[in-house]
Image 1 (tube, rainbow, N blue to C red):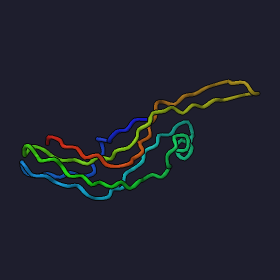
Image 2 (cartoon, one colour):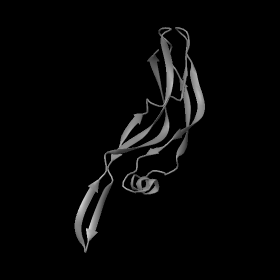
Image 3 (cartoon, one colour):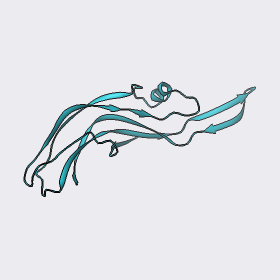
Image 4 (tube, rainbow, N blue to C red):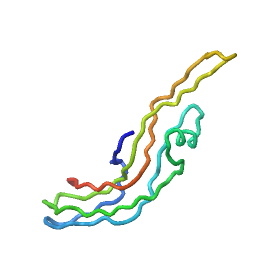
Length: 122
C-alpha cells in the first residue's frame, strides 16, 4: 500500500499574481477505483483490501497556497489516498488436486482519503 496523490485527476485550481496567494476550499466527490478480473466481484476485492466497495467518496479540500513567486504558476488540487497493487489468483481443483492456476495481470485500487494541493508551473 502506497500513499499517493492521483495527478491524473485534477479537482480544482486557482491562480494569483506574483506575491499573492489563493485558496481552494470545497468538497469533491471522487471515484474509488478497484480493479477486478477472472470473475471476482468488486465487493470481494474491496473486502480483501479492507476498503469500502462504494464507488465514490467525499473528500474536502482546505488549501491555501504559499505566495506565488511568478505569474507562471498555478495551484492545483488532486485526490490523495492509498494505492494498492495486486493480482487475482484462480485455482481450479479436481478431486481435491490442483489442476490449474490462473493469475490476472497486475491490478490496482485507489482509495481516496483526502486532497493534496500542489504549486505547479503553467
